View 1: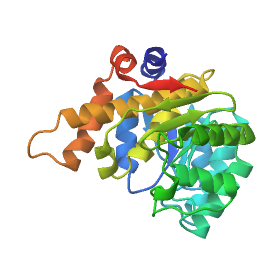
View 2: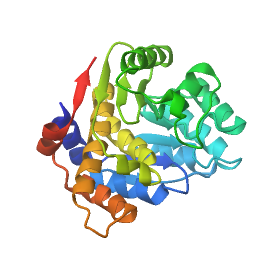
View 3: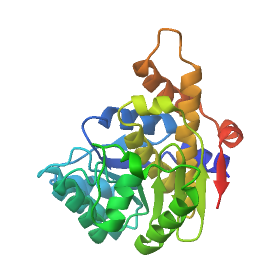
Length: 273
C-alpha cells in the first residue's frame, strides 16, 4: 500500500504552499524537498491566495500565528477550497491559549480540510471546543496507550465523520482515520520528541502525499505518517557515539531523501481497525 503512494510523490513533485511557524519553517521546507515535493512559503495577506492558486496543496500550521498571518491562513484556505486543492491543518497548541483555540476552531468551520493532523490533546480541543495541552505537547492524561487504543480509534473515527476530514493523531501510537476505517501505526522512535518540529514536518509531508494521491486521502495520510516514523527509526540507527538531537534531525531528513518504496513497505507497521 505504501510503496505506490511514496513513488507517486516522487513522480508528481507537487508544489506545496505552507503557511507554517517560523520555528520550524526551514525543516518543513527541507522535508518537502527530501520526499520529492517542492516547498513555497507565503504568509502575507497580499500574496497568500495568489501563491495558493499556483500550488497543488496547502498546509496551514498555527504554531506561531499572529494578527498578520491569521487573515492569510483564511484567504489561502478559501482559495484552495475554490480550486479543490487539498488542505492540511496542524492545530499546534490548540487548547494552550484562547487565540490558538479560537483560530483553530474558526479554521475548521470556514475551511474544508482534507486532513487534520495533531496530537491527541489538540484534536480533542477541536472536537470539544476546549481543552488543555502541555505547551504544544499532548497533555499526559490524554496520551493514547494500548489500553485506550480502541476508545481512541472510536473517538477519531467519530470526529472524522463529523468534519469530513481524515484525522491523523500522532504520538507513541499513531491513529489515522476517516469515518469508517482507522489505521494504527507503531513506527517512530522516542528521540523524535527531542527535535522541535517533527510534527510540523509531518504535516507538510502529509500535504505532499495527499496532493500526489488525490483519490487516496486516507491511505496517503497513513503512508505519510508511516514514512515519517520509519525515517525516525532509521535516523536513530545512524547516530554515532557523540551525536545528539541535532544530528538526529539531519538524519531524519537524510533518511527521507533516501527512502524508497520497497523500504517503506517493508518497515511500515500499520494495522487496520
